[in-house]
Image (tube, rainbow, N blue to C red; front, side):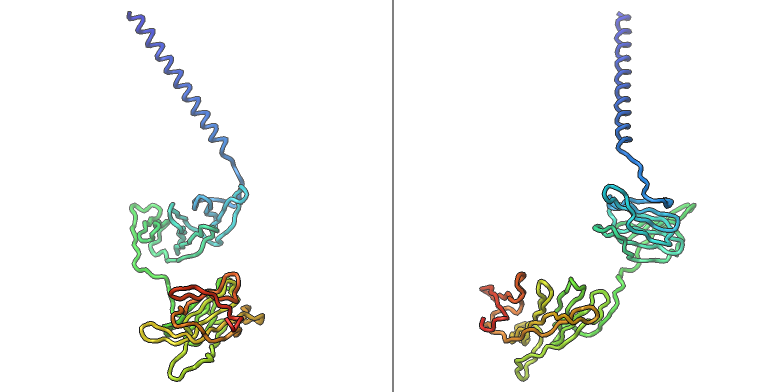
Length: 316
């Protein structure tokens, strides 16, 4: 009886050993598969140090005196951007849209565009605490800073919230209307009877002119009530009229301006194209739209109907 138990025990031990060997072989095969799925690639001849993978597509790497940016193009890592004369520690956390670069005297915050992966400098602060690395979360409200050989850490919170807005014009624009001209990176602003075209980034005035109404009633001020841009951005249409009590308006004229070939500082200027009286009833809304396929037709609407108006045909 005892001899039979010993034989059964020995058989179980042998079976267990075989299972362990099979498991080890499977793990080795899996490891071989992972190893075969990896490959080496020379992406640059520069020395590489600390690196982060941003948005699972862009690789941000610290070099000796610069920060390098790589992304995959046709299956290969290619350098697409470089920040020169930048030495410091990089920090990025998943879920954030910015990276921090901590240099000896300053800390740089760069926003990363999710489409182009290009860095854009958001803010710079003095490294007054002389830290080696600073870590901010996605909301940029609290940060943890530390330096090499420091026994503890410092927690930093933002003191003020601002975006460095600077006043460029202190005039009153009550009642003014505006539209964006995306193709030329400009915008149009209409106030009273004046229309101005300005550059979106520098706010520089490109063109300014006054609208001269044909219908003038004594004692009642006529002004621009509404402005719209055609789909091809070649025409500007405005509605002239008077503002009455209780937010009511009285429309008097329709004025269309069109671009001409002559340019001002690289921008083609607008010139009067058509001016005609408004012939619809008082229930027509002053807001209108250019037809997307034909900029000679305007879309108006009232409380009960939507209708088209061709300003090139004075009989409509």
